[in-house]
Length: 248
Image (cartoon, rainbow, N blue to C red):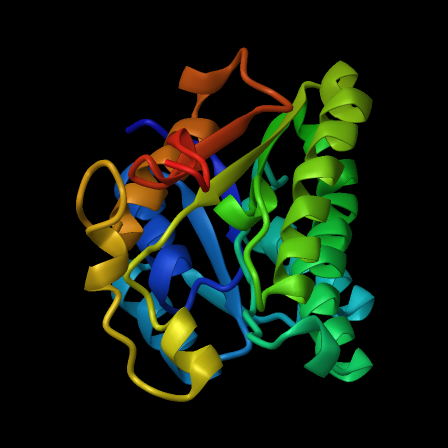
């Protein structure tokens, strides 16, 4: 039980990477609050795992305050936060509206900030904890047609380092995870069509698309005491995508 006694909030956990993390966390002994805006899927997952579910719009201060209090009331002080919720939007810079840009940054960037801020008090009272911020390979390098998404994921990477420096004295570790192409509905949802990711997988060193469980394994490590000397770090889960450059 690698997370025995841990109390965790996971955002965007109704499906995909967040759901995979929730399954691993419960299996490893954590008490888990699954959060999302997709209430039906989130409740079904929570019931199947013996976890709890709460609706959370990560861009809402009021929602964060409520979910943190619900988690404390149900399980005790929070010791793990996984800021996983995120959205994707494809468009050229010239075609990106302000509304599109602020929608993406409001969820991905502001949501991560609000989540970190919301759990500091509880984690401090608990004597420490681990915050895992899910960025992206687009938080390590840019990609065309993803200006808002890339901006938000670079911001998560930077905020992680600031938080690690500020919160280390309270025993709170903060790290970022940078998934590459992972087999989730995110790209298809953003484009509005079903997308075959297999050709992308053939371009990376490991010659395959990543699975949500690949990301969940790294998130699990960072949430556990096995990573007790890791903070402010960047952990790529990308099959080798960032091992090369555009001229290779």
